[in-house]
Image (cartoon, rainbow, N blue to C red; front, side, top):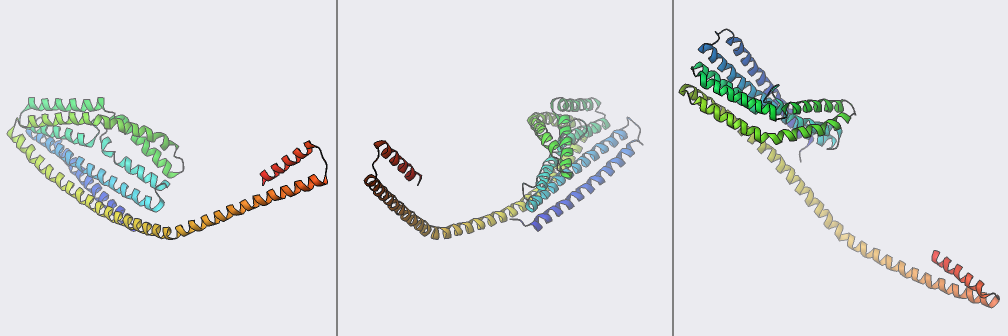
Length: 353
């Protein structure tokens, strides 16, 4: 099993990855802002104007991807901290429970990314992609196709906004974070106990909608591809961009696989430690069996001896009863009723013994 120093080292490494991801996000935001400042210098409605907007949308996609990576790094950081607190204070401790709940809430940050529809960061990137292709089509003069794509994007966003509980889920998640912080700062967890089930219900409802949302997203993706094919220039640009994006995605997945392999290695170490502990327990049980048998035999012998002593005591008491009755009968004359009464008292006395 991992030691406390190893768990702390994992957490420290996760903090560094989070800080690096946050810095990359800041740099991407700066690049996007610079492009937005540049578009204001171009004449509206010209080819240069739409190409400038295409660059902004592409920069927006890159920025959103950095935000997504920062979310993932934050979740990993919080998860490592939760593991550390469980080891340090115990799984049932206040520190461990709060850390685990915070990690769970971090895991759903990407679902409430945008302040407007479509909320989930994955769908937000898809909308940005539609806007980017729209700008490219406008720059090449395909106005009708561009408007068709814009209409498809708006339909997608309206569906998500109307059918999903994105806004409600975002609000319940924010309330849960506030309640968790209140619990962390004091011993009052009433707000958390009340808000957590509401959050869980909202998350379950969002997950229930997710397959339908993914279907809508696939329809918009297909529309983007069909519209891009209208222009060879636009199609070539989109294909090249998607190829680069795929390579980046594969690189990130490769890093994720490496991280998972590291976790599996640690799990293997933990499993080996548990097997060793079980082996030791098995050996201890064998040792216990070697002396518990004679102990049980000795206990049985003592029980048998005690039973024999009880039997002899009963016989002796019966003998005393007979002698006392004879003496009483020989020395005294009494009525039959008194004799019966005396015998009943003796029987009660023997029963009490």
